[in-house]
Amino acid sequence: MGGPSRAIPHTTSRAAVLDVIRAAGTISRVGLVEATGFTGATISTVVRRLIDDGLVLETGRAESTGGKPRVLLRLNRESRYAVGVHIDPIGITYALIDLTGAVVSRMTRAGVNRDEDPAETTSRMSRQVEALVEGAGVDRERVLGVGLVAPTGGLHRHPSLRHWADYPAAGELEGAVGLPVVPGNDATAAALGEYWSGVVGGSSIFAAVYMATGVGAGVLVNGIPYHGASGNAGEVGHVCLDVDGPLCWCGGRGCAEAVAGPAAVVAAARADGD
Image (tube, rainbow, N blue to C red; front, side):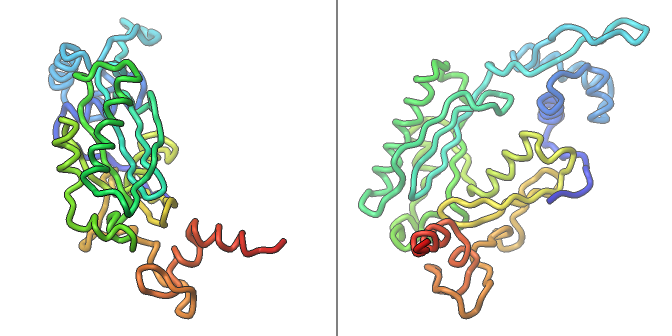
């Protein structure tokens, strides 16, 4: 679902300019002034520094509208990369993305299991991150960091993975791989991915329901993840749909996840003799 489009806040003018160029594909300096509201002098300074850092390239000129054709700018997609890691009981997925957010390479390996110590899983993830980057032929120095996402509420919420409750997965992976690691939940990451890909149009108020091992939702307000006072905004998997419904692993009955989650749907299909 969506709402009216709004300007997205950024921490710096540099981040704002990069985001506008990313969303536009190609854009002129005049276009950046119009899109950001910054002065021409600010845009000139920011763009010059982005070009000097290799993040932005000049890429030809726009069609003339009577005056001198405007120089167009675009992101240098190969200048920086990041790795996304989705850790889940059913599988760990790795994706290498370029500066535009496009997937360069991806792979899926065995998930988290009850018999493997969290430290062993972290070590395995570190090796697989390195293998992903090396296999893609990307200079390690161009990789900015790792995004690590897990099911909403954390892996430890699954009965068989209680031993993950106090394990600092992001911090341990950061130490193992030698890159900054930003943690999050998979539903919010999915919502951000949909937003970045442009499929929601100009809306900056957006929610996406995500189904994997469980059911969750990511909520964006003004393009920023919204977590709510409890930190659990979008936790739809354990909303009660039927007080007399099936028992959920969380201890409740009739939760959305127990009634209509992936495992419930598969179980119902297997039980259907037709």
